[in-house]
Length: 148
Image (cartoon, rainbow, N blue to C red; front, top):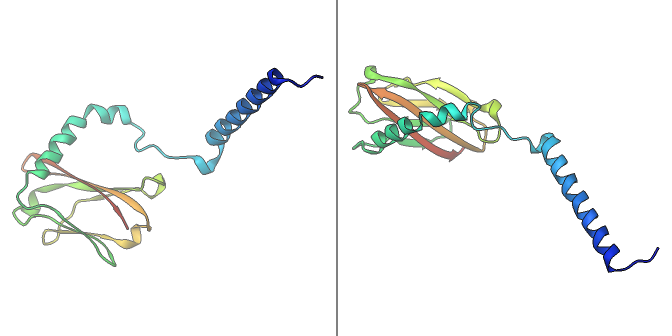
C-alpha cells in the first residue's frame, strides 16, 4: 500500500472521529460524569418564574434585610424584627448543586426573629438556600449561594 497525503488525511479524520465518539459515549454513560438537574419539573417552574421575581423584589424592597450568618454550629438567619412571627408562613429549601440526595426542605419556624439550621445537616461545600415565605398575603423570597 502506498502512503500519501490523502491516506494520511483519511486516517487522521477516522482517528479524530473515533476519539470524539469515545468521549461522547464515556461522558454520557460513566457515573462519574452524572449530574442531577436543578429540578425535574423545570417547565412548570418556568411558568411561575414571574412570581419568584416579584417575591424577590419584595424582599429586596424591605428596609431591614435578612442577615445570613455561618456559625460553627450551622446557619443562622435573622429576619427583620418588624415581622410578627405568627404571621409568617413558608419554608427553607437547601439545595446542593453537586448531589440531589443532600437537598432538604424545612418549615420556616422563627424563634425571636431567628431561624437556625443545624450544621449536622450540611456537608462542606457549595449550597444554595431559598427561603420562600408569605407575610400578610405578600410573597417574599430570599436566595443565596454559600460555601459551608
